[in-house]
Amino acid sequence: MRFSSLPFLFGFLPITLAIYFAVPLRWRNLALLLTSLVFYGWGEPIYISIMVLSILIDYTHGLLVEKYRSNDKKARRFVIQSVIFNLLLLVSALIVFTDWFTGYTGYSLDLVVPILCSVTLVCNFIFAFLHSRFTANALVYLLMNIGVGLLPYILLFFRIDRGRIDGHSIPWVNCLIISVVTFLGLVIFKGRDLRSEIAKRLHL
Image (cartoon, rainbow, N blue to C red; front, side, top):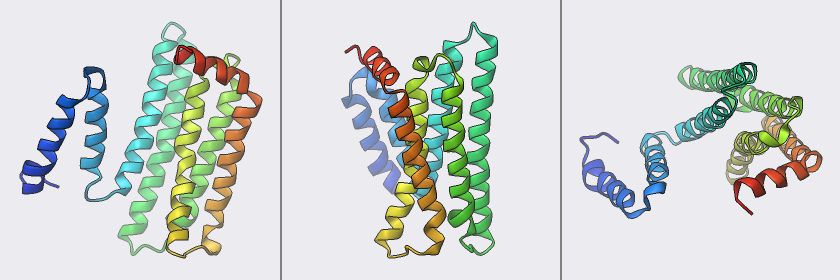
């Protein structure tokens, strides 16, 4: 969708402005974020998943860096974590695009991306338990797990819908298992800390 196109000028733009002025003031940034994702994903919806993951990574780690600004060592550690996760995301995107532009053999989505996704989930899980004050970062690690862990659900759903479940789906099934195990590990072993953090943030 181009800025000069009729769908943008007489469809997307008026709807976006109407939503922006209709929602309460504190929700306007969120409204712009969601409409921007729709705009950038209009032509290629796969871009939305990449952008959402990148936003989630940078936003959550930005909160942690701000929280530990007075502790330079911890702040640097969260910056390093953010760089690692973004590099994994960037490598995944580059591999998919390279595969696409060279004739698309399927190795990127069938093998490399699920492996990188699994590595990200395991790293996130390890980072969570390396910190002594887990409750300070509980929701961040849980959100990271949910955000990355949604990928195997989405990919497998489309494969099942199109009847393409075969041997090439095994890496995604393994990624799904790792997603469930790491999520349950966070909830089971740190459930009390998570409940405390959720109650604190939601003022319950």
